[in-house]
Length: 366
Image 1 (cartoon, rainbow, N blue to C red):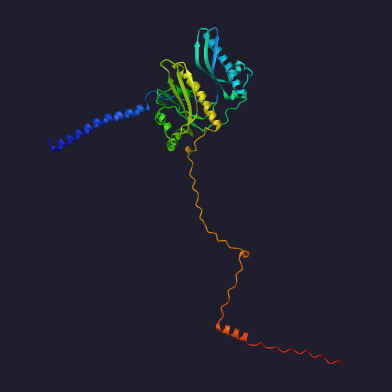
Image 2 (image 1 turned 90 degrees about the vertical axis):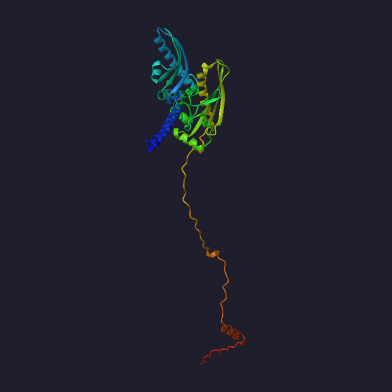
């Protein structure tokens, strides 16, 4: 083998070793990036925030000739109870009842929260949605008039001391995703956390103070500011009571608005506790909006720079009026030497007497 071929073989072996090391490294690095984006199941799409009136936790317990008839009676009973509750919530007193046919026309949907179906019995906890356009005419209301600016929602959960936002699915995020915001004065912007949103939004984001970074994130979601509902889960012992400590914060400076504490008997009651906490948290945000504490940070708003034309400074010369001018003494004229001598001679010579003029002659008398 010639020296040239030997050198090529040696060089080729060197590049082969580099490729053998670099290719697995690139595959591992790419796998890490993909794992960060995909990872476990994350991202819960929020339900549509339409304008329907919603009444939750309507309990029914009815019987029928069969399971289908019992369920039908249960739904009809839920519609009547929900309408009474909605009227009482709106007007503060019990109102006139409506027929089942009228209720069928204004009810948009029935949400099954819990149900137990027997051969002739139906026990359930339901939610009833009333169409705002049709039910609003009967209630005499037009809906929410004043709402806040679009606010980015970042629900953070602290469990076992570790904060979680969209890294994995949590009960706190699920409760916010299924919360209906139609009756709230807060304009929530609820990201799902799917795809790259879990990398852009994380629990460490609330510690940032850079307005430029916050502007970039808020522009991505079309929001004016950020609100941060925090949930801290404390388990007393395995299978024992669970305490939830909730606090409402907002803005890039993580300002405090209010807090409350809830308790459940065991871990199975955490979803219900979270749903209840979401309602109370929304009330905290609405109260802060009404009192003026919840307002968009002016430093997050990008305003166009107005360049004003430079005004040239001109010196104005004021001409004084004639009346304002003080009288000045005229300077004496310069006289020649001859004129001075003649004036002295004229002053030294005695004055000449002017001869008297004789009176005119009178004509002779006849």
